Length: 56
Image 1 (tube, rainbow, N blue to C red):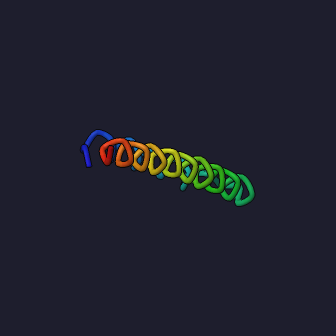
Image 2: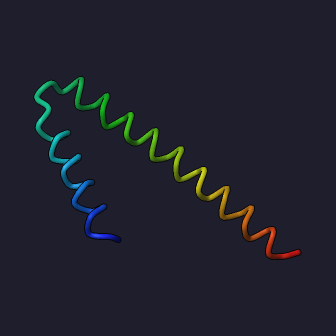
Image 3: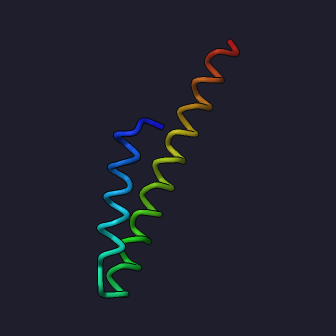
């Protein structure tokens, strides 16, 4: 992984960790999980399409 991306992710994690309100922290983490799951699904779909196009 690119060091710059790792540092950005680490800063985001630090920001979330600093949230004092537990309800807000959970909501933020759930949102991050939801969005990253959707992004992963999109990337896997693109990968399948790319692999299928190579088969022909």
